[in-house]
Length: 313
Image (cartoon, rainbow, N blue to C red):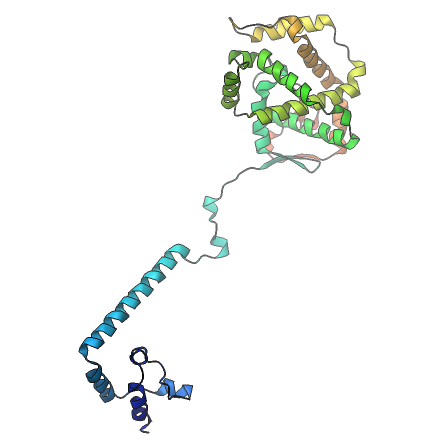
């Protein structure tokens, strides 16, 4: 065997202590293959240990232990932060997935969501026409949403700008509800504190109520423009509704508005009821010409192929 390792040992021994500790390539090496094959002779290692001293070797060893410990701690922290490796399919476990909303029906490419259905049922408390009709069911609420969507699409198609209500009209309708609606009178909605408590109790917001009143006025005005010519509401009909339908909704001790105060609202309700009968065929044609699909079988009703029926739009 060649004496080359012992010759290289002399060079190595003359290099810095760091080179010796890290076993890096001595400066005299030119061929990288020599570095891989080169191993110092044990005798030369003993000579090196004798020259540097036991204390120096102990210091070097302790430094290496500290450095290794810091490296392992850093590696552990990184592994904890990143977590175990996961495939893309396991990135979000199916058990932790949450359904935020879902489509329950589609009306001419316009989706109706489950949240829309829940909101429609909450807003029913503001509908004076629901007096005596009982609780609004999800099936009935969906039919109202479908009918409303069809009418709103027709309004946009005909560009019926005259049907858009003004802010003053919305404010006036809101004031009527807060001061005259039986459910609001029970909770003193005329006051700001009572109105806020009423909205909170029914999961509503002022902005949502205003939007509801706005499109309600818009739809009723559009229907009135189309069908008003064939409808006449007599004072006798208004008085009968006030006496037989509205008054029974008030509890004993409630402040009951006079007929003159609620006559316009009763006329709107009666107008809406008669309009529902007149535009039934028109709404059926809209459904036939368009595409209405109920995606939730639990919400299917025999009315799904008919018109809006009773209730409000």
